[in-house]
Length: 459
Image (tube, rainbow, N blue to C red; front, side, top):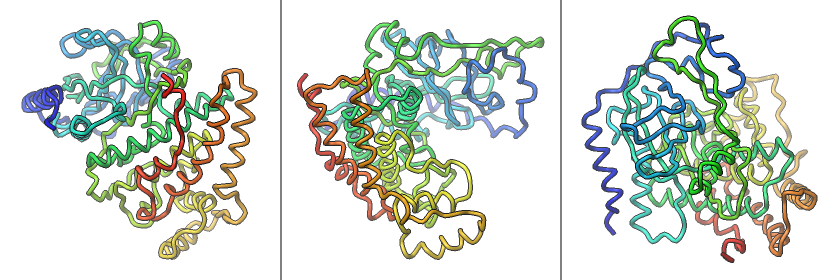
């Protein structure tokens, strides 16, 4: 089947625009701006967490304020959706199509000379091409690329990606539930787990591994947002209200590379896990071809799969490890390895405590790592709950908490959902295997979730 006209249109637009673009901005000097930005914005604590202000310099973030427009006035900024180490993301209104969309503005130093060289654009085009060429009876597992352009600002030239609007990340939803003492609905957990695996399977068949330092992490798995189709009032309620801002108030003129307004990211406090909400994989900026072996290991320690410690490389099967971690987090509402900073051997000890002994060929390296950190106290796996026992204990907690929560409304399918949660034990267990070759495929893992989504099928 030929690629869709819309897909070809985006490709042609990107190629044409890319030829007109200049080389990307050079890497900025390592000097810090923190000391002279402190105190320039009143009530700065109201907008935390916020991207580092010292990254608003040549090569860094583009300064954005509410009401700013892009693409000759087509897109107007209405709220901030979030930020990462390489980009900020904004809720914008597409005045041409009269709908809500997401605008991702990358740091200048992470923007390629031409749009078609952008890894994220390449990945999204590959996914869209595969989607259009195959018979799909399910929604996309990725946010569809609607437009791409480059924007010249005081800090350089920035790649800008316009995609369909998605809802809060998994990490945001889990964090909010934990903060309010709530439990994710069993059908939400099962639906999200299966759709996540189906999404990864789709991407791998399209030849794309999410991979990279940001990979299939809790921050890069997002729920959809059906309210994007509704009016302004509904979507701002879901976001948590109107944007919280603070404006520049320094006595000196505002440097051009700094934003005159800081905007707090949306809380999504009032988003609800409705039956029709789906799962999307987002942030494909470090995707790579399925057949490639990657040796770049600049990852937060809790995102690393075992092979990155003992083999110094990973491939597409890294996605499978991270999928197991994500499903574990959906079920337990916490990371399986909640350890972000510290020595490698302590983190690996956390793995061993949950998953058992490392493969025999890794043992010499493991012993050397332990000897290098004499103060570490590695947990003996024999004294800790195995995965099956931990799942059963959590299952009882979920059932009891849902029975007393006002927000959870039982229906004729509730007992069925509670029972089917148990199928996640095998799913997670067979994904969280030390050796990549021993992990089951995403397709097989999805088949383990033998659950019927009665509520959606009844529609």
